[in-house]
Length: 521
Image (tube, rainbow, N blue to C red; front, side, top):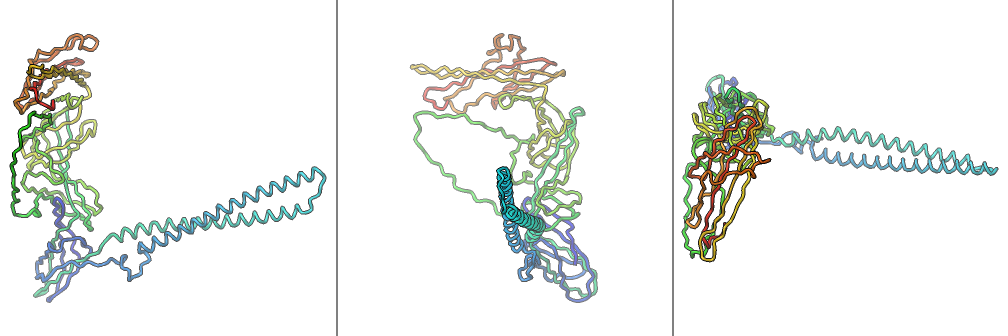
């Protein structure tokens, strides 16, 4: 009986397969066999239901494939072929050795012939006779002819062995590929009260399949829109091809169970207060809800706990273990573009797009291929974004804008009578517009935030640190922007307007004050 795969539901680390077939049955009990199923299917998930007859039993029967059965004595068994390859390689190497030996003998005989000719010429010049010279040369010619014959025979034998090895390699590759396939069949026992047409539906779960979300964003900068496509990247090596199947991608996690996790004890300990206060500076990533800012979860998929299912058009996924991209959704939305510079992290001014997810389903966390008019520009990552939610996406640097950042630090230690250690930090950022269009750039710097009383951070007024003529390249004055904004996370932001072919500068000064006895600064 034939029951091809009609539908597949791919989960994060497995797949649920549905097969369906039909046949005509006479009244009575029948045993149906379905060949070519995956040998790695999970037996406890195997189910079968029939329309027109009752299913008595269904089971998976695994067996050795014909090319792997040693009782058949197959000549294409990989072990036998590899032994034959070793024999042919030895024969080829021996023939090549005989070719080399014959060639060495021919060279030696040629040298003897040349020496004999030289002796004959010398004897003739002195008027001496050489009665045995003719016999000697005849013997040397005969030996050279026999050496040539041996070399030709050895070369022919080596060529035949090489050709046989070439043909044998193809057989070995085919036999090894077939030997990697286990064979399995489904045995279904059914009973029909009367003659009927049976429609049999079989379902089971197989490992060796997975999918992850993958996105593609095409930015039309002039039109102010983005074309977003969400695809499912599928891998499967289940042992059976999915040919023209209805495929669904699910985020349900049935294997996690239904019991809540246990809580571990949280022990609290006391320790003696140290005489000095040890502090350290650390980087802290700001996480917030919205704007696609959720942390990515790898290797799993972040679906916001919704357990989504995404449907795709009928497609074919081969069992080759290679990635296949299947479109599962997308949208087209207007975009708000801005230029963002973070000189502390990068010397480039980046194009940032503010996008609203106008699709009907959330965007799952995953990589994004970035496409602009010039083609592929890079790859980014997006977090979980709900439907209707806005998020930011960077499309790489703007080639027309340059940023140069300098930083200086001065330290004033406390005296013997006490006081504060003061470290003054001055940052200067210069921006240059090489293009013929005006640019508006949001520049962001940061100041440290103190979490202890023994450390204070004071930001100076905007005009406390101004660039003089000596600080300008070539002595030329650069217009300085002083209007800025400061938030409670220590981020300082300037809005800088760069005229065509123009330059601007911003400066920042802050002081870090630490009490005596504070170590680490």
